[in-house]
Amino acid sequence: MTQANRSGGFLRRFAPAILAAMAALSLSACGINSVPTAEEEAKAKWADVQVQYQRRSDLVGNLVATVKGAAKQEQDTLVRVTEARSKATSIQVSAADLSDPAKVEQFQQAQAALSQSLGRLIATAEAYPELKSNQNFLELQSQLEGTENRIAVAIRDYNEAVRAYNVRIRTFPDAIGAKLIHGAKPMTPYKATSAGAEEAPKVDFGA
Image (cartoon, rainbow, N blue to C red; front, side, top):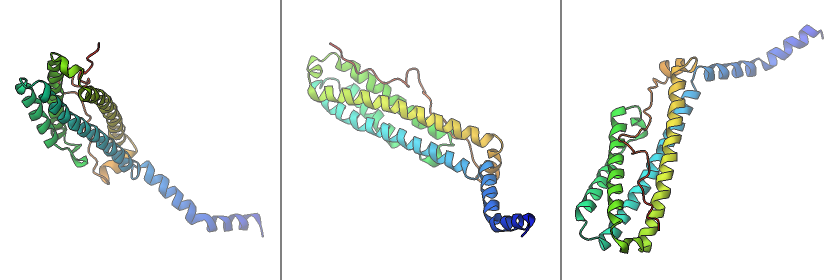
């Protein structure tokens, strides 16, 4: 068998596998696979943001109950925190809503309002020595600090995933598949809606 015949036989034998590999590379290069992968990554990061905000909401409910027992006269502040918590938990943004800036902003504003109300509640509690020595209050303080830190990390990770996705659907060659096949729309990053809203409420009572 000549060298040419051997080469021809090799090509015929492996041609389907070679074509399949080339097709896969072509699809990947046009964003067929990479765009939905990036989209799912951003959605997963958004789920992490929601989990941490829900954890904060649960802690705030316990905090309100604890303060209510030691500072009964602070009803106005307690009512405001309770109302802000209720509004924040009532506004939900699903993964399908992440391309709607108005819905994301509504969620952001509700969470920022709760942050502000929580900050006022904690500042008010400073005037009550009984709270400073309340073990339950101190434990909630520690958990809130940790949760606020986790919220900040979750938001940072979500914004990075959104940035990567938005860049991918706008740049060649992924933009081809993003537009023609997936109908991809930019996702909305999460940002602070009021001064200092991105910072954890101060819950350090010190010595």
